[in-house]
Image 1 (spheres, one colour):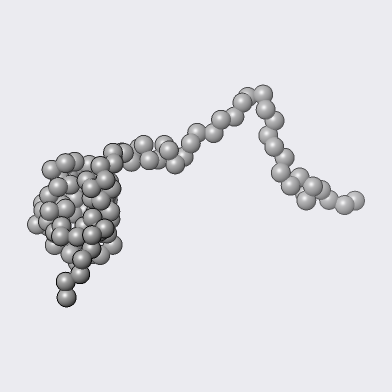
Image 2: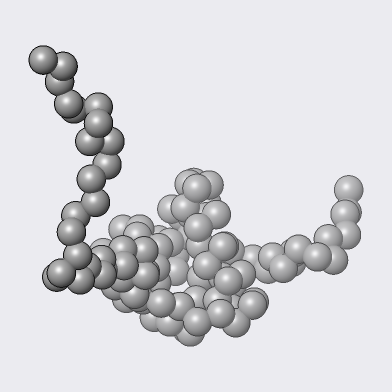
Length: 111
């Protein structure tokens, strides 16, 4: 049964083409940084990556998501350091400010 999928950006794109496009665009090092998989880190090849991704649906989903994000939509990839810096903003504490007392009344004891 043939079903039309006009809004699916992956319709008609083979997994081999996805991996090849990602490697040609970013290289194995960046790909391994973006998707933490051993098939991209240790002795990477298209053939070994295909073998692993066909057996592992969660890994294939990650690679396909990266493809849609970076190749189809043309978004810029960030390094893991940039993601971590954005997720963990440095606290801004002025030296003269007092620490806030939170729930201090619950620690008072009755005499």
